[in-house]
Length: 371
Image (cartoon, rainbow, N blue to C red; front, side, top):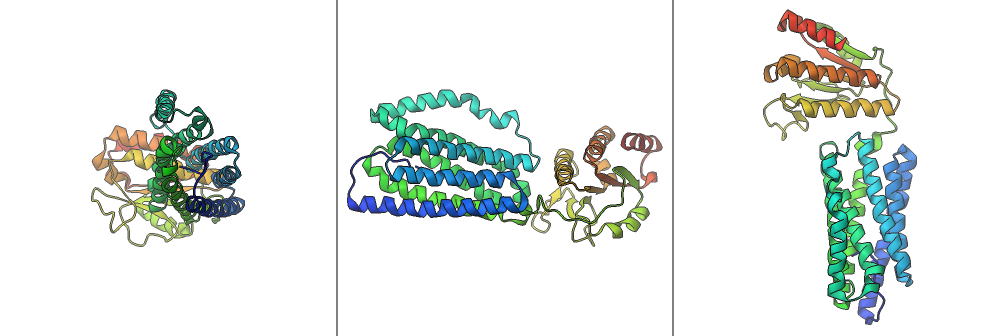
């Protein structure tokens, strides 16, 4: 339960606990809002700005509830939850992750579930005023905040533990408002509900701070890279040509898919292409059969660099290995799509391959597709 509370008398201990919880939450809210706004000013990520606005509205939710304006508090709570959802959708957009029909299909059932749930609350409480001033806002916030956390699971691969803590805290915060909407009308629930709310809000704020202060989040919008003297599009190089060019590319934050993980330039983000699960030894691995994942990673990389005004560089130094695990048709379709990504986003795709390793007809098809 957030800080929307029903009016009514309470003993001094209960009142002291609620005041203490409210003070903790308001301090956390205002601190998070200012830090997130500062991060927005640094890297211009709109998701940080939206999350900052969300925590300001949670601050106003607590404040208006404390002075007895319950209807106003309910409105502020719904605005808070809406800004959390908006911020999460913008966050996905910034990372070039699309929200699919499957992701939002949950909302097909939301209106019916909402009205049935409100009926249930009325049956339990027989109090229409509580539904208007508290329960309805808490139910709406439950749906939007929980859904926001579910959406953020799509970024596990990019942010790993940082996003995991955030989306878990967000889902828990959303779900904890269910008993709040059912039992928040009763005095016996207030000590449990308000203490739990304060703990989860602080947990979610700390998880959010960990996420937005991470190097991965902060780097977007302020990428500084040397100029690349390469034409946009696709380059087909043999191993010898690639090794000569590699030295000049060591300071470029390239995205590489490789088999040889020795002497990889420090600034490259690379994926070890292998069928063996080496996650303990290597942070980033990808299966040669998972062309879909490779496509998504390359698309996100090119789009991020394009939005930042820079020239992206992707290197695939394992084409022969991919050809062992995939059909020729699949490989050609895969490379054709990557070629389009590179051209549209003004980036360069380097394909390392020995001409004699492929049938002449297939190599001719490859050259025709990518050039």
